Length: 409
Image (tube, rainbow, N blue to C red):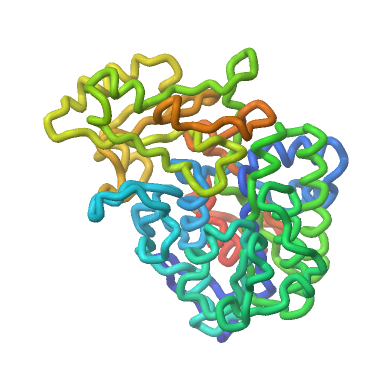
């Protein structure tokens, strides 16, 4: 395709890649992780991006969870457009609670598929397999996960023998190595295939366990820094953002600071009259126990929403309770996939269902999690300077393709 041409996806126009573009979504990357790693002297390339490239603090999508934000990034649009509003939701049509990782729930095309259809060489590497089918929907190119790298085939993933290419075995899903595999694969693909566009998405295993500046966190960002530097040396435009931030969610004694909403509603209206859904829920709950700072509740038609919302707002640790209409307008969510009430907890508080339903035995360090407004600030970093971004007082993480393709020098 002519490099001066543009491609329009979901109402936004993007210039064609002049150099290979690598967009990285660092799962759980609170901006402070980067600042502390740079201050510790372990991330010289990130320091260079901050000082010689372009660096912004932007907003992610709320709920600040993995699926809605990754899909917002690759569609350039909020969940109201693409339909993915959580990792997990209540399907009113079937009356079932389900994972939202099936492409049938996606309502908009991705930039990845659109560029591939237009002739670009596109590659996608994600840490966890739960994202692979959504990110790869309709994509004619390479798409595989680190978690199931040994199962990748030419027919199903556009690539085979991934582990031999990367020189690593299949990492544990609960390890920093899962993310390192993503970066290592990205470098190898850039060296071997030189894709026009590559999207890399990591896991937040480290961020759930270690605060910014902790030795484990700095070691993770030092690892990442080395791979990003290699991509830069290979001539790629490197654009980095995050799906959400991360905060400690504990009391003063280090125990999880949880409000159990199903127990609260059961006490107000009777057992199981209300259905509480936690959109953070996914198959990988060891590091967060399915506890996040965003929840939705489905109430019976006769319930007094306004009165219940008022009483719930009075609970210490609850930051926001709004009805579906207001919440969907505020957070740009699809109304048909959202509860009657949207509930957001404070910076150091998480929301659960019943105390008896959450297995916290896997938490070997004080709980760190996300989901609320307090985890909305994320980085947008570029290894080149911007040429001006008109009308953008504050960026969103899903503006990253727009900036990388339309506004860099």
